Amino acid sequence: MSNYTKSTNFTAKDSLPTGDANKVVRGSEFDTEFNAVSTAIATKSDLASPTFTGTATFANLTATGTVNLNGATVSDLGAVTTVDINGGTIDAAVIGGATPAAGSFTTLSASSTFSLGGVAVTSTAAELNILDGVTSNATELNILDGKSFVDEDDMSSNSATAIPSQQSVKAYVDSQTGLGGATLAGLADTNVTSPADAALLFYDADTSKWIDNVVSGDITIADTGVAAIGSGVIVNADINSSAAIDISKTALVAGTGITLSTNTLNVDAAQTQITSVGTLGSLDVDNIQIDANAIKSTDTNGNIQLFPNGTGFTELYGNTNAGTIRFNCESNSHGVTVQGPAHSASATYTVKLPDTLGLTQASGIVTSDANGVVSFDNGTIDEVTTVTSSSNAATINLRDGNVFEHDLTENVTYTFSNPAASGRASAFVLKIIQDSSARTITWPSSVDWAAATAPTLTTTNNGVDVFVFLTIDGGTTYYGFTAGQAMG
Image (cartoon, rainbow, N blue to C red; front, top):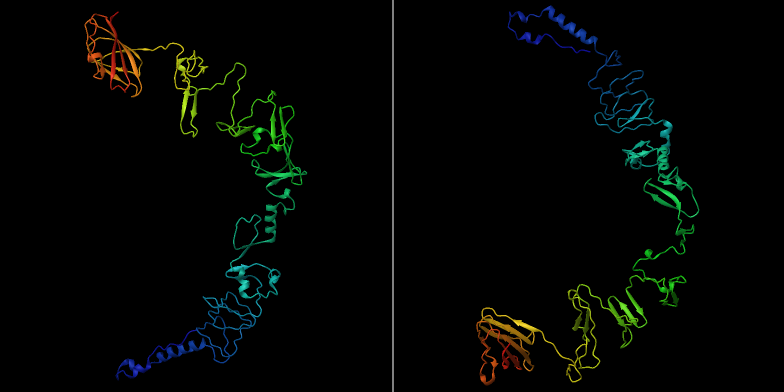
């Protein structure tokens, strides 16, 4: 439908000068204008009760009365601000335009597809009518917002928003509980083969399943839950080393040489069945206690006696060192140790205590009598200690012996060392053998000779002189005596 547009500006002709050819109004101009008006009129409708054919287009349509579209098809209403539709059909209309808005409907009917949020609702009317009569408010119904219904027998999606079907819930529960969990045998991880009285379930790592078995063997368990240990099945190795078992709880086997009276255990030593008692933390026997490495008498001022049999003897073994025994003081803070000879000495002999204190005897220990006097019933034998000189000097160490011998090889100066302490006596004998060339001796200044004159040595080759020395003041003065000269 076109609008009329004027082609000739007739008013402009009035201002043209007289004689101007364009000032003349021509018939062709009138004809053009009337043709344009005729065309425009032919395509316009009347204001009162107009009738349209074909497609009518309105930029803005305002109706103050009633617009009757009965029997008409409106293909595009565009954006309608407010509309009240009582009947008819609307295709592809969006309430609110680009921004959907709310609409009020008395009855909403969809004969084909009904969509919400762009998603087609495929439920039937009967299925949706389940909600018929629900009085929940919009907030309560919105719990379904973002939810979806799934049919998964294994619940594999593990969704926090999906709603499962009844069938999928039942299928999943059955798979986890064994067709409803009516029996243990129905559980997926349980393999009950032959149920029996007092049977228990045990986990089998090979099959990753719980299996049934009845406990048997040394230990049995009744269906009442009471466990029983078979008679005679517990052996020594089964008992923890720290177990504290009262002796009254011990069932002794006859014929072993052991009897029990109250809490007293009696052992018959004549029984050959007893070969070992194992390791004991401590053992109390009558008035003797054996604890760790100590043997103690539990009687007041009690004695401990050792009884060898026949010609046997009590033997003290050695280990890293030779056999050793120590006699402590009453406070056990110090003591005297007696030790056997080393293995390298190959010594095997008997040492006896003397029959009489203070008197020596064969193979006996030397003792003093009640007065501290030692009497030698037989002779004494001294070792002869050889003296050598070096750089014209020699030392006679009184700790080495009581008899010394020196075969001179050079002139020598003597030193006497380690005499007894003052108040005790040290005496020794010195034998001198002269060299082929006469040698001289320079005596210690502490030697006091008779008349303060040292003897003259024998000068002949291999000539022997014997001297005796005595000190009682710790070596301050040695008394020198000539026992013999020019001997040999």
